[in-house]
Figure: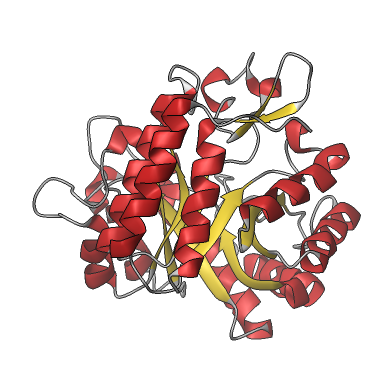
Length: 334
């Protein structure tokens, strides 16, 4: 594996990180990364050990991964799923699984008992490896009415579509918690789409953690336009739940931006977050670039903090070493 020399621009940001930790948030933060070892070609089985190696180098606590479930609530790639969970556990890395129940996005009317049973079976089979899970991902974006609204109101969403999905999610959570009552559940949303959280409250969905997705096109989350200010504190006070940043990076990664620009946003924003507080976890999105997506979904293909060079070897973008240093400094200050 190729190890990059630190570029001059990256060195400046590493020094900036070190100086700012004197004023950083002192509470324990869970540090993580996102990846797709069961669902995407560039994270396939042949790269599993490489993923683990880089996760350990970063010294992250948790790996956020996605899994597709069948109609019984078990992973479609059951053997691979169990093997990867065991691999994480053996290497001292927790898993945060984002589960996609069968028919979660189907327009067919929700069947509470069917979704409940999926949750029961999922936790009965895999619960020993799970302390925090997610159910679905960015369901706010899947049901928002159109691009001209900011998502802050219930009326900004396709109510029929969203309520159908939320009923399935809520039933799955109920089933999961009936097996493992201390299991924590995170549900994700992005930007100012907290109207989605209002709908969750309306339906009394029993989740525990707000998973916020934040990218550079949304600005600085610690200094959002009035009335928000530090958005983490504002959201936490409104909904009385802890805030985790479960996806975070420069928008579209390095598709249009260079390594230094990505690194600058991530570094400066994380330092603002550490200084002002309000979050319990941060997950960078994501570990590897995904060249396999460049033809069909090019804007999703360059979010990695690692890429493959012209020789096909993994190489570090500037942000890799910066993120590693931020994690190290945060843990030293605990």
